[in-house]
Image (cartoon, rainbow, N blue to C red; front, side):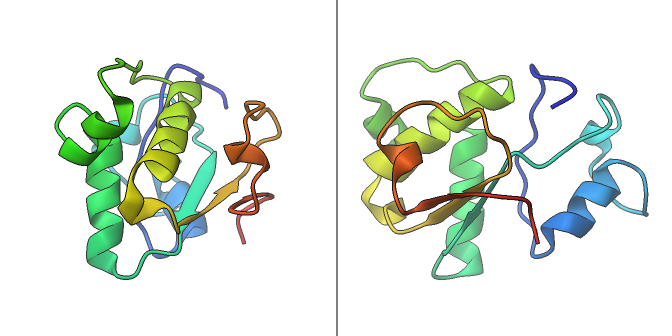
Length: 130
């Protein structure tokens, strides 16, 4: 990504369209994403039972220090919150350490992944967004 210390987490039903909105190609997009363009997708988390569950996951990923489930999974360890690499590390903790999210699927759009069992598991696929 062009700005490795910047990251944005958001819910959408159309990831390709949302990235285009954030980059200013089409109308819409969050005001917060006007800086640090161009944006590119790093990961897509899928397989939630409902939209509500997906939004709860999004909120917990954005606010790990406030989410009881994520704080429990972190087990007192403080994780850095900025940049896509730290967000992927937190994603691993959330998907492996919180029972409610053990079934979600993760698609990663980059090749530089950490060398852990989670990133090599069948739950994770590597490839561009469709």
